[in-house]
Image (tube, rainbow over all chains, first blue to last red; front, side, top):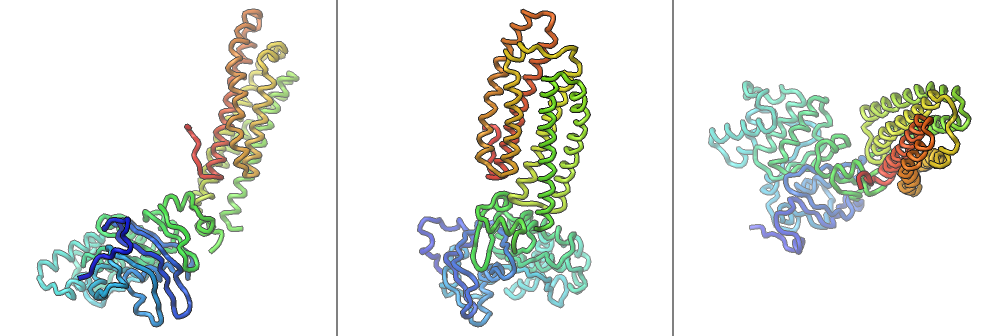
Length: 265
Length: 217
């Protein structure tokens, strides 16, 4: 049984923040990729990470599902708390833990299976075998992903026959079918056309009622449209984190203003 | 300089040109009052079309910048401020035109005593001076100067408030010049509104430079 950590909660009640990070440093070998990052993310919000290429935003995103563990020579210092549990210090089962964290990548990556089996995949891995539960959950996830109407009659067709935008929504359906509490998205619409992008953005807006969403995006207008809060990263540092309307109308830091107005980066 | 920066620079140049034209319009109206030069007044009325053209062009350019560049932060505030300053300047342009139309309709020059008693010239010059100062504050991005303008229109308010009693007395003493006296009072009212427009512009400049909203405080 994982215990709630006390060291970060002196004045913060449990459950106030879904994700809490304090003084996080990350090194690839000797190179420091993240420098002293501290951030608190509230539940049921959309948080956008923006910044120029190589600023560390994707690296930071991957800290939340411990994907950086898979890279050699990575050293992580500091605290990353998900639901008030330090996911690096506790002896947690990483595979169990990752079930709580859904991830959607830049390019849609459906399995070469049917549409139904793609969404049911996580449930089956978790040991669910009841046909009715599987059917119910697949339908619910596809509806939440705004894909049900388009695929309800072709559930047994290969997922690879879907368009790019549909495949990405299928990946979102697959991620949310296992009911994660956090949804991480790494540039989820960057390979999609404007119509599919708009659908994904609308979907993100709808999904925040059920999940805490963290999205990395290079599209600043997308960040402005969909997120409640925005974090600006530059050369491994979190420069500014604030409400999105504040960041895009009156940022506190010159570096943020210079980046979002296109004066550098 | 990025494409957006270039567009913003051009927008700024246009609004400053419009501003200078509106100042010249007010100034020419004053000269035409002093000299009773009706041709000069007709020139102001004719030039009002140029002010209107500037307004339409600046509106269209702001709309294009919003649609094509999605400006944010200080750039967004600049475009929003220019959009509102544009509208305020156009109204001041209308006021200059209206004043000139009074001159055109007058049969004889305004009575010097009436103008002196109502401190007409001081008020007129103060209005032009305030409009020049807000332009300077915008051009030099000087929020301190913009803030000082918020108090400068007090003189205009004061002269406007006192004008009623002077004009009533004047009418009692000069029944034959009632229409002229009412026209002077009407111009004084309009000059007071120039002060209000300048105050609005100063608030927009502060919003642009400091992201602070001073309206309705």
